[in-house]
Amino acid sequence: MNTLPAMLAIHGGAGTILRQSTSAGAEQAYLQALQDILRAGEALLAQGSSALDVVEACVRLLEEDERFNAGRGAVYTADGTHELDASIMEGHTRRAGAVAGLRTTRNPVRAARAVMESSGHVMLIGAAADAFAAAQGLEQVSPDWFGTPERLAQLRRVQGEGGAAVLDHDGARRQALIRQDGPLDERQKFGTVGAVALDAQGRLAAATSTGGMTNKKPGRVGDSPLLGAGCYADETVAVSCTGTGEAFMRSLAAHEVSAQMRHLGRGLREACEDVVGVHLPAVGGQGGMIAVSRQGELCLPFNTEGMYRGWVRLGEAPEARIFR
Image 1: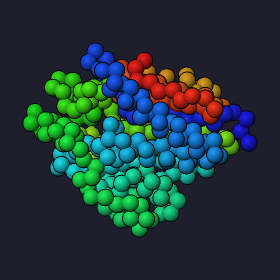
Image 2: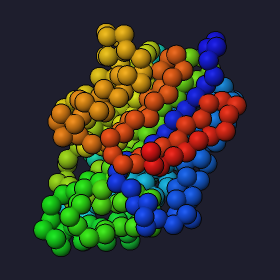
Image 3: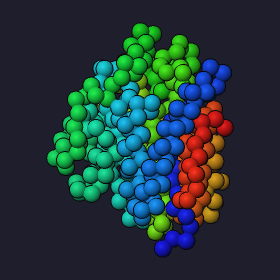
């Protein structure tokens, strides 16, 4: 039995702050959404649920909230479709599952777990992954269920201004694209969600999910479903990332935190801040990560102006933040 209190952290994307034009009500709505999910996760921890169950449940709730770019509210590809990616990993066993390019599975994180537990593989992609999820009894929806009018307007605006693909964070030279009543500028926000947890038995787990990037080429896959890049968990640490996908892939950002802790003897904060502050910028990377260690440390660093994030320790009130 772990003597440290169970704990949980979540994120919903990082980017540029719109504090000057953000109403108190809009900011509170985002904070409330994060806190509600944290409370749900804490309740599971209090019941003795595993870290794996907790991160899956929290990411599923984030996928259901169209404020975030994962599941419903996912951004559009250049073809006007949705391609969703997710991954999940259990630390003490290093079991893992991932999916990419889903179009009909309502909750990609559930599909990732099904891959881990029932496929004999680690990753499935595209139509075959949706078919596998359906065969496992996971809810399927019409592809247009993921879309929202705001996301479609975002795609049309980008395509009307030259058609360059943009991440949620990108487009500083553009006009407002979507949800400018939100605390983070949707023109400059990384759209990924994730969760990490340490349970009462000392087990770690991480999960990450995303809708990708607006107007991306169909078939593009970022870091979110790639173990070691956007998601990783072992006996030392659990990490979930949000940011410039290609840079997180090139840096193996999530795994790098574990490697520094195991091989250099660094603490969680030192390792995370080195990855976010040094390794990622070296390859043009922006964004952040959430991490929890086996010793009960939490770290939620980012090199953007803000990040939707929150954390809770069992028995304590949940905390949610957007700004520094």
